[in-house]
View 1 (tube, rainbow, N blue to C red):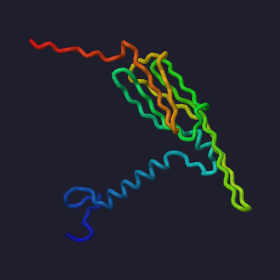
View 2: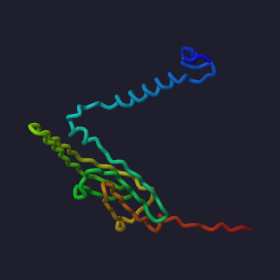
View 3: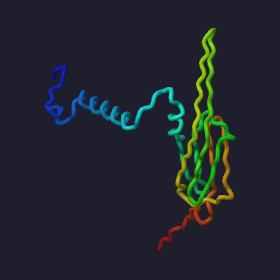
View 4: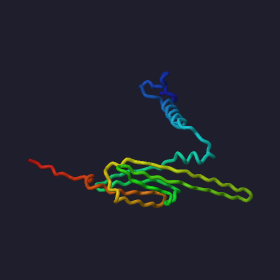
Length: 160
């Protein structure tokens, strides 16, 4: 076999697989297509960039509770608002950040701010009176106890 595998016009090798170069080109095209679907704003427009930001969420469920973890780096706990309506949890807040650098004769200051809101449909009915939230090192953990009706009940199987 040569150093450069033979391929037809469709980019397939004689075995019917895509050549590595064709696969690489497809991946690069897919990457650029997904990147260019959304309008690109200039890096200096930090207000617009923050207005579209939403935190990453992890939702886990146990027999007795639903736990939602949200990554909220750099956000003050006083700027967070958590609400439960029916089977929906909403986490909202505002980020205010100012970075200032001073070197001899040069001073540089950048401010970023913006609000966000993220809602998630809960996988089970929860007791709105038994919700707790803890914020440690930029990670918000909301624990929602399930209602007695939503708690899983194990039913034994009778063998005859």
